[in-house]
Image (tube, rainbow, N blue to C red; front, side):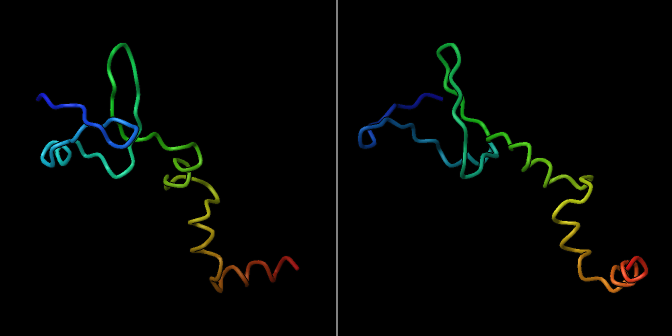
Length: 82
């Protein structure tokens, strides 16, 4: 598919047709990569922390702690250690 590079303020841009954007699966945030005469638009890579927080296998994750923090069984278990 051919398109034109257009002026947007002091920058330049490319209009991406709605159908093509829908097929790509890209969200609202993208990462631009340049390599040998190509500009690639890709989904941004998650940081190590974001990837860790998204995983269900993380030990002691904030998600798990938030879910388990106020359970009565926890109070009973800690009471026996005091």
